[in-house]
Length: 148
Image 1 (cartoon, rainbow, N blue to C red):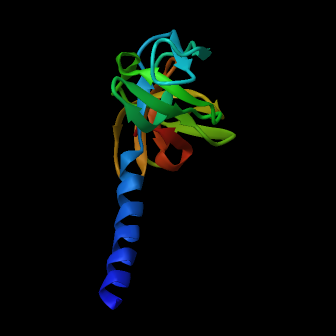
Image 2 (cartoon, one colour):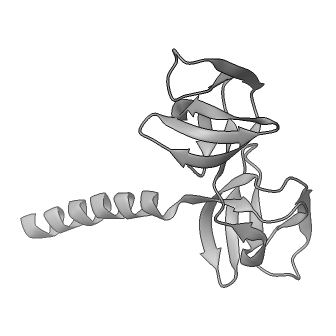
Image 3 (tube, rainbow, N blue to C red):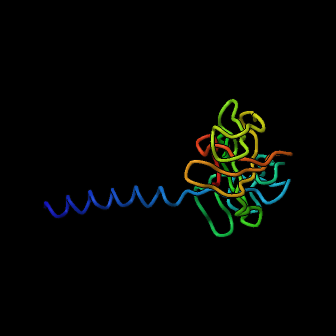
């Protein structure tokens, strides 16, 4: 009886950890991507995304479709051909500063608003080098949400 209880507890613990590892971010491949109600082309379209490289959280998969959740908590299914592994993130703070170097003591280049799309060039422990609009610089990793 004790062995069964221990096995049950271990399976629950392992199950929770493996579930957390299955969620990951991808980005939208083009400027027009359909979000569908189900995992096939015959399911109706819920909404159309019009922002290339928008990061989406992958929750589940069914054949060639992926169930996603976006930054506004919209969820649905997207065909895998419309997703990319390019790295991008959204600014999640009201105002974040882009710096010339990966230090708060370096020259500030710009302040960006919440929701601004940033293409990720590379990341270090606490900082990511980004490009957004005409600015390229470093931003704190804690200010970003998406595929880092």
